[in-house]
Image (cartoon, rainbow, N blue to C red):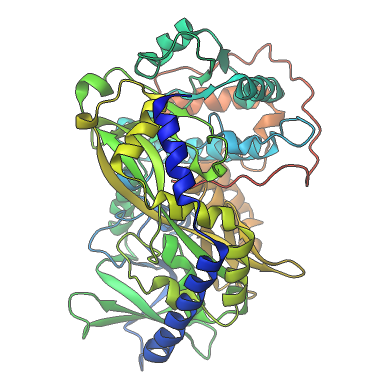
Length: 572
């Protein structure tokens, strides 16, 4: 074990003193804060009348609302739309390129999507699902490029190999099984595996330089990976929407009131954050809340019964960043590892190439951070405000059941930059302190759901919540997030507008936007090859997809739900 690892282990033991008793004490204190907040700030404003009426109100100026708005503007161009964003600009929270890892999440390198069960079998169903969803993203963005809604593809998507780098014989065996299992799917064609340090050094030189010659290292590489700037996509989408007749984008206004009208519509008031005496109020037939971490408290404002079963647990992330061109020019990949033994899986590290505003940078992390804020630019009262009589017990239950996560977060908060640099040197042995700085990324709110018979359960991924009458909808959760926003918003359209989705007009338009809608590319290599070629051309991706003409699928390991250990992640 290296000196850095010994140092980390010792630090971990010292921090291991965080106990359940301390957690219970903190939870009781938080409950008291919640009670005080409720007394002081409970209730909500209702305007006497609306300034205007709209068909659809989108709350939150991020990638989700933008994607839904672009869909609907094509499907129903005569409807009226409005967007409320609390910050002065759109795409300044989770969608901002600096607030996420920019991974075009397609399960090529995210090992938590291919867990191994107790019998040693690797399960690929989740990986296939996420990769299918990313193919929808490629088609959706390609369509918008062809229409001129999105500009030059290099502004928002760049070919970036997705890789894994793991250490030790046990992890090598897992990677071997993973690669073999993924051969059952054409979506993962072209993936290479190597145990040869010389070959791996060709792929990722800065991660192999200075490494001991006898260290057991294993790597995989897929050339089909991408780096995606969600902020650039979001800003271009809103520029397009704001130029359309019947669409109004309002920034600098925070929604603080959502109440029901007698006719079933919703009266929503947004307060000007620079002059709180100025209030804009709209009556909306449909509301979508795509406000990242703020989606839960906004959903609660509506009072719909579906909101009562949810709580939220905020988790932030911090990256080490370098902009030194002598380093960034020598690394082109997103390289994901595995959590060290004894660490929860959400601590999965990765060294990522990013292209932000035309400049290449490298990020390493994420290191977990914690704040009671639900947004990076939120309030310390966010968690207290979202804690209600219906979700306080489920939230406490998750705190007890997921105590390893709580303990891990407590330990991460104490890490110094020196210790974070030591973690980086496990992946980049010759990293120098002066080349790297710390950057606080965005906040994510993990879903806590009150499941009958189970109590509070920490849910992974995202969840679409829709009111019984389908007039209110929201997206909760984080991973895989914006990378698969076109697929997520398609599923929302199916839930909110089921009758319209069955019409010939909507079906025709949806298939124009997403040609493979309703089809499984995993089961159709020829169609997959066609769409890979079409989207690679439209998005000007640098690396051609592999030839699937002779693809012969192998039998995938049997999927046996219940035998796979839950694997969370920070989801940045």
